[in-house]
Image (tube, rainbow, N blue to C red; front, side, top):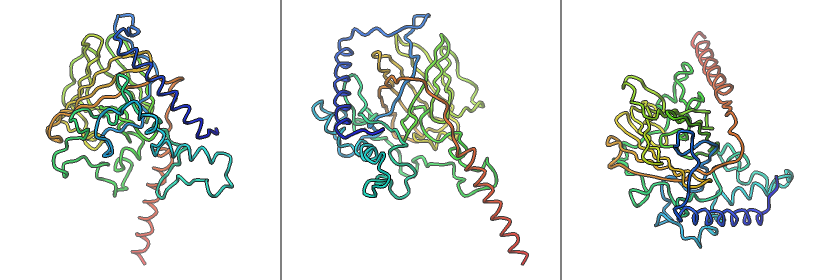
Length: 338
């Protein structure tokens, strides 16, 4: 898998041209989405949200939209794109000490070959975006006091008493915000499969092989029923599916986008072209944030199927961690008897 820098530039340029053509079709307002037997728009298929666009707007950008004449240059100069090219340049050159692993910094578990966060800025209505967040206008999450920001992990990182005391990521249950809500991008595995019926929408997330089920036309479950990704019900507003999620599990407060049990997420799914699905979300959680805030991005179609995700940390690393702790306890016990 060897790709030259020139190849990447050609690919990026072709991508920009395709996005421009797609934008022209969308702006014409003539798009008619494929429909299910019940007449509702079809969201079925395989999708990806891999992108260079982050949730919050980087300081170097002052506006939401990237001018069309700057997209290609900014894409080619993006550290992730540069890093990917650098890694590709090492393919087949294991003996070249000037190239091999040079993108593998201290503490980094993967070089560019193993990750796939995205190679292009996300586009919404044909416009390349600098952030998912559109409100507040500055593209930043309106946290309350810093002390109230969500903390990663569940606060039990120092306990090795048993598997239940280890964090969910280490147990291969939850370790990213990919499933949401809201659904966020990750270092890799940014693929999704959607299956649809008149009364259910199933979103299978590649990362950790989650399956989110939205009950269309249903009612919320009793508050005592805690699901990892909250309780999601949907309703149609024209050709847009509106999903309301409440009753977040306590673990969700520590996720990529922290939401407490008092919070609510509204998601909106709208098919805008054969290649894109517009995804919009609003977070309303007065416990965590100063105000409701909103983001949006486009899912893009992807070729092929989404295969099963295998989390070897839970199969191999976790037993190793716990057996190591037992060995330390045994050594400590033997030492106390001497």
